[in-house]
Image 1 (cartoon, rainbow, N blue to C red):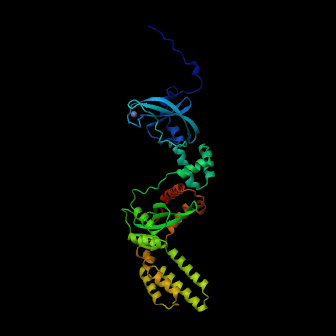
Image 2: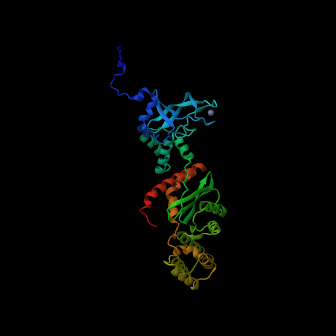
Image 3: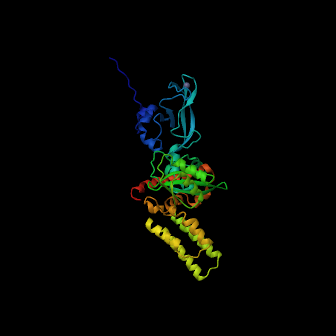
Amino acid sequence: MSTYNIKAPYECMELKEYKLSDFIPEFSEFRQSDDLSRFGCENIENNLIRLEKRGKIHFQNRIAICPSCKSHHAVKNGVYDRKLIFLRIGEQICTVQKYKCKKCGKVFYTDLSSLVYSNSNVTLPVIECIENLYQIYGAGLHKIRFDLKQQHNIEISHQSIENILLNSNYEFNYDNWTYSGYYLFDSLWVKINGEWNYILALFDVKLNTLVSAKLVESEDSTVIYNFLNESLRNQKKISIGTDLKHEYREAIDKLKVKHHFCKFHVKQMINRKFKDYFDKNSLNEEEYTELIDLKQDIFKALDAKSLKDANKLRDELINKKYPKNKFTNKLIWKFIIPYFKKLTTHLENSNIPSTNNKIENIFQKVFPKHIKRTMKIEQGLLSRFMLKLNHWNIKNEKEKNHTSF
Ligand SMILES: [Zn+2]
């Protein structure tokens, strides 16, 4: 029988609870589900392992795959230091495992692509956090910076935040939707480097969602036709509502879709035409009253509650006595009568809205004027727009169930 002297580890008998992982680094991943969520790393790929070695965060792959020959046979081959910025723990110098492929002999690094872009120190959860804050606060970079410091222990410059937002490659997810066939179309003018550009947007009236949006340099009818045609490929095409621009008219007619004008814009245009005429001509009391009556009759026809009423009011308008001159002739015979169908489409089908308010409201909410002026470059413009749009769509998604159309 032999006896053993078992040495007690006196030097580590302080009031500290040791875990297996304190002795064997490889086990530390088992206690990290909590850490992972705190640092925002819970979405890193299964193959990427985060350990703690000598007080430093260390990254390695579960299975190191050679990017050159795709071999799974590799040996560890030293580490390199990399500065990374995490949620909660802020900036950290981490070690990253290097490997050598046993088949082709090439040296390669741990695949960090599920954690950070190769040209950046800022981890993806932080970028996501910045994008979310931007969606909430809009252009308030100071507020975003303050919030990052307060809530997430991250010190990051305005310029870095700006760069992250400008490079944000958020894309609207257009796929896998079946649209209703009822749409509104509008464009937003934005000045980029002193030049006017246009954001074209198509909106589904029934689903209350954006179908697509695109930044273009010109607003001519071919550009618009191509945008609509691509956006609605293999989709139902019943009607599209717009304001009165003739480029829209040409594009939508070419698309062979029912086209309707926004009633609000029509009335605005008519009011403007009358005002111009009154300003330029000195009229007597009687002429003036007759013209005001004519305007009221036109508005009555536009506001009719049924197609039958609208057509009746249109016929009355044609037969009525009003001052016949260049102005009234042009208004009635070049605009109201030829386009009467486009002006009353909403009476044919209750799915068709009488105005373009819905899409204009989105533009206003998503892109207030003060933001427009801060835009610098094309890429940033669209990515910001998409971020805001996404936020609008998420909020909208929640409200959707409570709204009927
Ligand atoms: Zn290899």
